[in-house]
Structure formats: C-alpha cells, structure tokens
Amino acid sequence: MHFFRLRPGLLRHGKLLLGVGAGAAISLNSMGLTNEPEASFFQKGFSKELSHRSFGDLARGLFVYEICSRAWLVKTSISAMSLCDTLHLSFLYAPFCRRTFYRHFCGGETPAALIQNMQSLQASGIAPCLNSSREIDLPSDIDPRQFVSTANTVPDNIKVPAPPVQQEMQNIAQEAFDSYLYSIDLASKVENSTCAIKLTPFINPLVLFRFNAILNNSANQPAAKFTEMLNDNPSFSSYEQDELRRFWSFSEKLCEYAQKKGVLLFIDAEQTYFQDTIHSISLDLMKKFNQQEAIVHNTYQLYLKKTKGILNEHMKQSALENWLMGAKIVRGAYINSEPRHLIHDRKEDTDRDYNAAMESLFLGASRAAPGNKGASQIPSKSRQGKWGIMIATHNKSSVCKVLDLLEKKKIDTSKTSLYIAQLLGMSDDITYALTDYPRGEIPEFHVAKYVSWGPIYQVLPYLVRRARENIGALERSTEERTYYRQEMRKRLHI
Image (tube, rainbow, N blue to C red; front, side):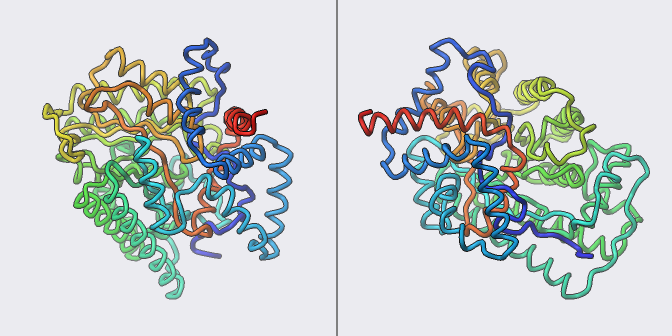
C-alpha cells in the first residue's frame, strides 16, 4: 500500500482542462437577467476587451470554447488523452495543450511569462491571485466515506512509512513550500496581487485523514483549534505528532513570510475528509496573523450543509478574540466526489446559503471590525482594521447581489477589504463588467483572477481536477463561445 498519492499528470484523472470554474454555471435566462440593460452589463465590458486582443489570442479562445461546448468532442478528447497517459505517451498531446488550453487558462510556465501576464491583468484593473497548487490525495485503496461524519469511527494509528517514503514526502513538502514562497515573492512585485495555497503537501495525507476523523468526533468541532487538538490529544503516536507539527511549522512560516511581504493568502478548500482539519488550522493561523490586517483567508464551501454554521462560528471567534476575519466563499469544488448526504439537496439551497454567507460577512465586519478611516493608497495600510472577504463565483446572480449591496449600501461595507474573483480564462464577461463598474477614488472592491502557473506537468493535474468537478461549466462555455464568435465575425467582416 502506498502511503500517499500525488495527483499525477498529465491526464491520469481522466479530464482535460475544459470549463474549469468555481461556482454554479448559469445562463442569463436561468437567473432572470433577460432584460436588455442587465444583459448588456455583462456583455459590454467583455466585448470591448475582446476587440483589443490579437487575432491569435481570439482564435485560440474561440477554438477552446468550440471544444468545451461540445460534449461529444470533450468525451472523445478525454478518451484519446487517457489512452496516451496509459501508454506513457502524454508527449503526444502536451505540446497541443500547451499552445491551446494551457495558454488560455494559465498564467505562464516561467516567472517572466507570469509577470508579463500579471502586469497585463493589472493594466486592465484586475488583481492576480497566484496559484501554484500541488495536488495530494489519499491512496487509492482507502475509502474515506466510512470515516466521514460517522460518529466514533476513527482510523487506527498510521503505520510509520519506510525511510525512503518519509524522505519523499519531506521532499514534496519542501518543494511545495519553496514554490509558495516564490509565488509570494512574485505577487509582491505587482500591486494588489495575492496568493492561493493548499496546505495538504505539508503532511502525510493519512495522518491528516486520521486527525480529521478525530476532529469529527469533537464536541467543539466548528471552533476547534489545531494546536489545542494536537497538544491535548493523547491518541496520536510520536510519528503522527511529528507530522502534525511539521504541518503547522510549514503553514506558520508561510504565513509569516506573506505577512512580511504584505501579500494576502487564500487557503484552498479540500475534500471533506481533510477539510475540518484545514478549518481548524486556518482558525489558528487567522488568530495569529490577522491582528492588524487580514493576511490569512480560509475557504468556505457553501454546497456543504454544515458550512454555514462553521462560518458563523468562526465569525464569532473573530469577534470574541479580537482578530480580523479572512474568508473566501465558494459554492464548492468537490461536489462530484463528496458523500451525497453532506451536500445540499437542491442547488437553490446552495445559492441561498452562499448569498446569506455573503451578507453575514458584511454584517459581521460592520459590527466587529474596527475599520480604517484613513484614505491611504497603500494597500497594506488601507486594509488595516478590516475583514478580508473574497466572493469567488462565476454565478451572475451572486455578482448582482453583491453589487446591489454595495450600490444601495444596505450594509456598511467600509470595514471590508473585498475581492470578487473568477478563474483566469473563465467568465470573462463577469470580470470585465466588474472592471467597468463605476467606483470612487478609493475602490470598494478589487476584481481578481485566479491564475494557475508553473510547468504544464505540475499545473495541469490541478486544472484537470477542477474540470472534473465542474461539469456544469459547459453551459457557460456555450455562452462565452458566443462572445468569441461575434468578435471573430467582426474581424472577418462576415
């Protein structure tokens, strides 16, 4: 049995980078935006942006969405590429992916290419959120469902891996740590840039899995602190304690460096069998580093029934302990692999919790955050005393909801440092509509793009997983294809 599984490239998980996205994909009609003013709001900014793109970029984007919007072609491509992976022939499709899907959805393979794309985004009024995530998962012979939300069911102590396996895991942890430090350095060079990270590479996933199961049985679970659980629980072996301490040490040092550089960190969500631990360590990290400004942001997946309660509990802890809340809210990234009973029964329930979470965060900040009355143009100064919030969504109704809150000032949002984000290459009509949205001298929110970067063999497995978990994004692909077709017809005068 393997002690861990590094999600491999390029296509071992059976999905190509096709329509990745966080949040439900919807059309204008499905959300009721059928009248011309609202529909044109989302189209106008993106049409203007497309008119400035080179013919090559336009042709590549059109090609990507022509494929993404055809299910049969997607399935055929996936089958062919899976066969290549099985035969160790990924080099047959990697060059093609690099010139098409990778260039459309990713920021670059080298720092120079990435910086160029970051500066281009910044010139358009978009804040890059850098992501060099490494995907780590459980061994394939482990069924996590027997331990998820099952009372009094905890895996046995983890067998100590052989020295070569331990060394390999330590190398993975160190490489991920170094990669994140480098991303933070790059983000510090472009104003308002941020970083997204995954903490799972820092620990043996089996230890993380066991800690999560123990946490599930804790009466204080929503408010459980990682360090308290580690220090007060005698059930961990010395090996497990070493792994958990390494997990904390890497995470703590990463946050220290981000704070030193003035770069915001967004801790990505994980599968349910890891996520409670991520919540608990994020709580400790926020308490330690979010004293003056919200550096650390935890991610809350609102397609899970219990997430609303966890978010509310974390906001209470923030108010009681006088630290600044940092939150990224998403609908969810693992919906096709989670135990069904943990997920909302209807999409409407997810939408309700998502929009309610958005309002709760604004309301919580207005009541608990000290705020910052100064009008500093320096990002680190303007963020002081404010809660950090990222509304990460491709859902137009949620975007309209947050704009309505800002415009009508139904809730005081002056005590929040707000980002509204989409993935690079996805929902550009939303992104560029937001950049055109009228604001004062000091913007009430930043528009962000989640930018994956790095060598294709490292980045594509992560994007593959995002594709697998966001099948519904094909509907959005059809909509975005329309924008590209319209611009191409203009260029070709047809």
